[in-house]
Length: 85
Picture 1 (cartoon, one colour):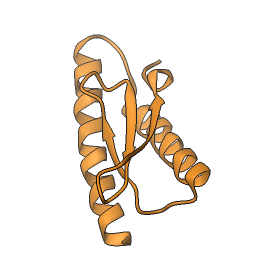
Picture 2 (cartoon, rainbow, N blue to C red):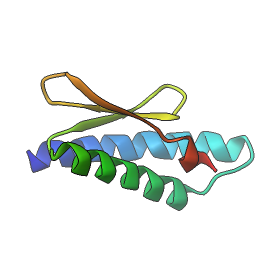
Picture 3 (cartoon, helix red, strand yellow):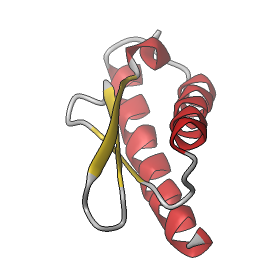
């Protein structure tokens, strides 16, 4: 399960880096701040749900963090617009 989480985390990090690149192009943002904020939201969701097998995904506008089970059930959706400030 840890390998699945690690793979999902790496994919999410790549997506967040892409979102950061768009933010820089549009005139703002700090990658380390965005990534740190994103990690905090992921940890919060994991702790609230008491699960470590979640798959995280960013919405197309990178303002909502979605958490799915490995069976495809959406179990959390969290606003991460604070990470873009």
